[in-house]
Amino acid sequence: MIYIIDHNDSFTFNVVHQFSRFDKVVCDNYDKINYNILEKANSIVFSPGPGNPKDYPNTSKIYKRYKRKKRIIGICLGFQQILFNEGAKIVEQKNIYHGFQSEIKVNNKSKIFDYNSEFKVGRYHSLKLKEPFNKDTFDITMRCKITNVAMAFENNLDKIYGFQFHPESFLTLNGNFFIKKILSA
Image 1 (spheres, rainbow, N blue to C red):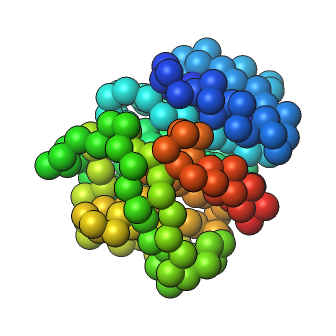
Image 2 (cartoon, rainbow, N blue to C red):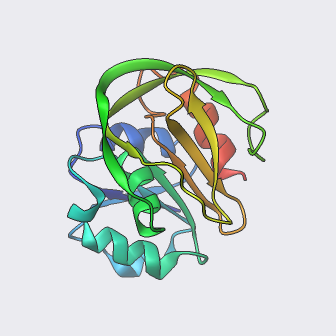
């Protein structure tokens, strides 16, 4: 079962629909978590959402509680939330990317996606990871081809993954491919 934590985002039910193609999904709001169901889940997904990761202390507590115990996947704000909890700085970017399609490229650090693969993805974010970000078990595995901004990370040791882009967006070609690969990693 996959437990999706909703950060009050209009994309959340697109995320629910997409993940439900691969497993049973339960979705609750970030401030109304059902811990009995969460305990039974194999995977936790932090949804996209407005604002900054520091605006969601309950999600931070969940991340810290279940890190190394369950697969954790972050999308957009969820991507930022995970990195924020790992000590990264999340900052405003020069340009805002809302409803923007970008080309991204997989680098040689990915253990899941083929090196040098390129994808078109949908972006909806005004914040980004401030680099350098160095954490032994976290690898930035995809970057925007034009801006070099981090677009995905993998922590295969702890089964923690994140996408800055939206795999559920119609602007992301082959979004199900990303989800299937992460769930089977």
